[in-house]
Length: 365
Image (cartoon, rainbow, N blue to C red):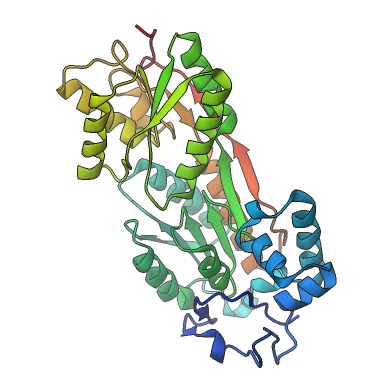
């Protein structure tokens, strides 16, 4: 089956098997309608077979939240039948395997990413593969360059919480087996935690403790997870009758987060939920420096449940994310694709997070 190229008007560069970048004009297209001269399945073929417009197929993979559920399911099934998904990934032949998987993360200083790397490493070792870990420092331009440089040397890639556009990620997936963690990307194997039920439980616990207002300390601007968590928190607060406020962005922790914490002091609430545990711990330290006590003055909840939650004082309530299980599953998928085995499905893998209550929560005053 020929290689698949999404021809919905994306201007991102196509990435070839050796990591070189070519524009769409030199990637095999023979006319403006998006048809290819090499017989490959295109977005036009999917639209025709599904009986929908090219724009609808494009939205199905780029913006699935803008397509109704019935149409979304129909288009995905047609695309899968035509081989639109499976052909995006071009595994190497067995004799040409490099024996190496690439893992790209945003911040190696965050314990979350070190735990993910360890889980991927263990699965790679079990399958006789090596692991190359790269840090992007939350920089999308650097992230893309790092990934492209890795392509000629690896058999598969795992992108953890990438900041790149969906279209760019799909085109990277044309060159090697690829999985995305902590984000959903249409047309690419995506693995992420469902924090929603745990956030509902956390908000419900705050309500029982008498809290009426909650402040959310948001994560990074480009973080898909931040949007997911903010939406879940807003829905839970609305359902429980709690008022929700937001500060400006607080991650990565630094000057910008300190400014956000200072705005909290001008309009404090009795409870705070942070984007992650690193932000929550930094916030508790900030409060202590301003004469406020946790949980006497403010109840604080983090997300991730990193080991620090159990050793800081007070111990930090958090939402435990099954990141190691997701990391192992991502590694299994990518290695399976590199070895021409395993499941070709693009259905997202979601695992539920759980709420862990500790001493940082108290009765509202």
